[in-house]
Amino acid sequence: ERTLPIPETTSGSSTNSFIVGMIVALTIVISTMPDMEKIFEEKENHITTLSLLMGMKEWIYWLTNFLSQFSINFVFYFIFALCYSFGYGLKGSNFGIVLLAFVLYVISEIMFQFFLSTFFKMASSGRSLTVILIVIALLFGILHMFVSLSDDNHNTIATSVFCIFPISAIEVFMMQGCAAIASGSPGFNSNNLYNLDLYYVPPALPMFWMAVDAVFYFLLFAFFNAVLPR
Image 1 (cartoon, rainbow, N blue to C red):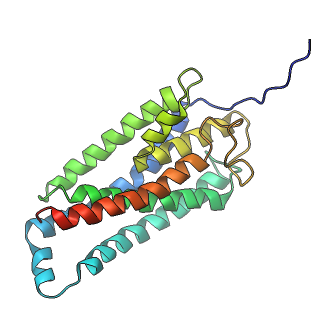
Image 2 (tube, rainbow, N blue to C red):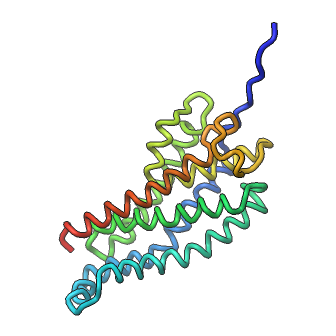
């Protein structure tokens, strides 16, 4: 009796992929915390309010903060993209795809942190926000190991829900890529962005959600920044 060949799905996770995912996810958290604490300090001391009363445009204030954080992190993640694409982790992957994913993550994570900042009023909240984001990264890293990248429990809908958080989206991008390449599969490239036979979580899925997250959290930030007391 003849049977049709079934493409092998590359899945699973490992300690190495988990660590790589955490490093990529948390680098922006550590690098942006001084800037976020400065925002909280200016809010607590009413420096921002005074500047606005003196004629500073609010959109210029936030654009300056965004460009400052984005510029610093673009350098970090450009180096990451080089290291992972040509060195360890995602070796053999298309550099442009990896860099695009990192840029989408940087933008969406900054927007997410700006959104959260509308609920914090004290300078000490910066440290609290750091702890919250680290816990989120740990939680979703574990969930991806046992749900998104599990042979028995994989669920695309659940993975998409997890990717509402930018940290979760970049973690599953890195963890799936590292696990797949470690097992002998080709790296991420334009031919396998949507390949469900090769990956449980193809790179297009987290990249799509990071783009959505960037817009979604920007809109939430703009709304809550306008209606919540400063």
